[in-house]
Length: 174
Image (cartoon, rainbow, N blue to C red; front, side, top):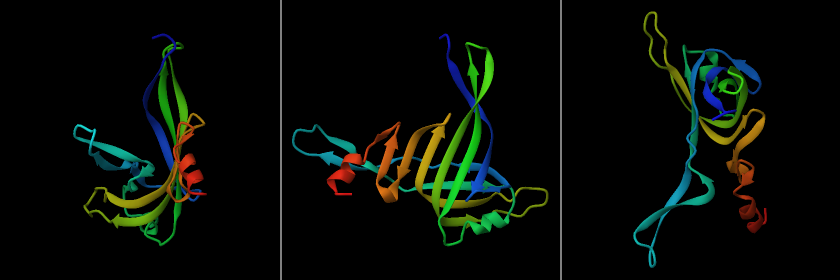
């Protein structure tokens, strides 16, 4: 296993809302990527098969968990689309050099408001407030290479450079 790099952990991260750095976010629950699917059954099939709809994804959401109630927590309810940019440094172990290295990861999310939970008030404790946003667009760059780009409103579903919806757009005259 010479010359391998082993993914290790997130060193740290920042969250930006339309370019402005957000403070007070404790953790971010990233979206689950799941294709819309339906059951295929009938003659010539021994049972059922769940088949995904090419390039179409189920609803995605991102949850921002806050240490306390902030202006930003409430602002997430505004009836406006938001662009969140998550910038992190992830650590890897380079076995050839015997060193730890830092790799940039950038996640861009275009979102719509869904809900805010104000959490709890307790002396000397975090409120554990949350903001939940619907994700219409996600782009993930790892080490400055785009690995995923999903744009539901513009028929783009690109995974490692393969746009699953390119032919669909062409067939629809888009």
